[in-house]
Image (cartoon, rainbow, N blue to C red; front, side, top):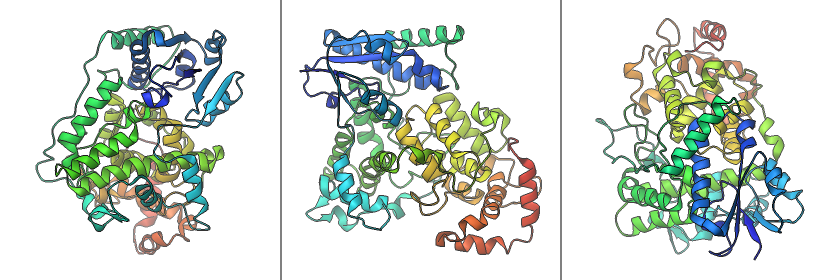
Length: 490
């Protein structure tokens, strides 16, 4: 059996053909030089890679080198590899002699199945909702014969509630205990940084996410047992004192390959069938895994490498230094300062903070979509090219003009006020567009709409907002003020 080369995001048993298959693992220093990653992301990836090497023992050849090419020059046997998760890495392995590239793994829908679904659409858009329903049928998830369990495919209306008064009564999540491998990684990263070999963004901190299969299974069990039951209704809500709420925190483990997505889905489904988790919560979680996650993966490959350069709204502002450096202290707007602080200190926020605070602000200010995708890739522990290009370029920044999302995900302060507790302690007022207390999200929203009026005219979901634009008596003042604000921290 040929030795299987597994990248650092292919660390689970499902990337092998047999439990005893010989393995090649490579730690490349050059990867950390190419991008200025979050310190905790670098720590998590190297810790997971080294833990896997320790687990496999003599079954694995573990090479540390400057580049992959340098390491591979020391390998004297044929290799197989599951296709990597980015265009650059896939192109690299495709050119290597004596390396057989296999179909990708780690997702619930195969490329063959996606291609069949996409070709069957004809001229209809590749809607995530339709893809998700097809996946539910094919995989027989939450199905009662040919019908969805409970008679409904979608529980979104129940799953968009604001935070409950007094907060969410959900237990704190499982957290790992660091060991000597974590300490070794931390020492190496600190030494490399002191030597000027690599540079990071964000702060160091205790590892918060699984780095081994055993840890990933413990985290999955903890989520399904303790937080899945209350996940659904408030999954789009934000609380300053509860950055985790009932979210699974399993995306990093999934994207490292430590969990098979179907085992996560089956565990959630089993909890519902056992009467331990309500259907709305389970459906919401299942939608994220076999719906949204796989949809992003397949669109990344379907739309092609040029998709990352999409810029339908002609955004032309490089993300300012305070944003790129995660300088939360420079920002007065409480929601944005809090979000940057979470990224700085943990390399993580849940999805609605990414979309409706960080992404929303970037969209309103016209930050370059490709730069924003790179920022999310580098600064989040679960960030990879295949995740962030469609999520940020398409979903968050609407740079594809509607290929992925039917409207821009722009919103004013009223939305943040409804879905969080940030506005009460903020020096800005969500209802104000002008004056000293004008909310930068409210004013920024109308500046965004006015600036892109011609580009949004053909979008039926923006018709009401465009009509409202011309009823605002102070729109000229709003636009002038926001234009003058430029990249100044709000």
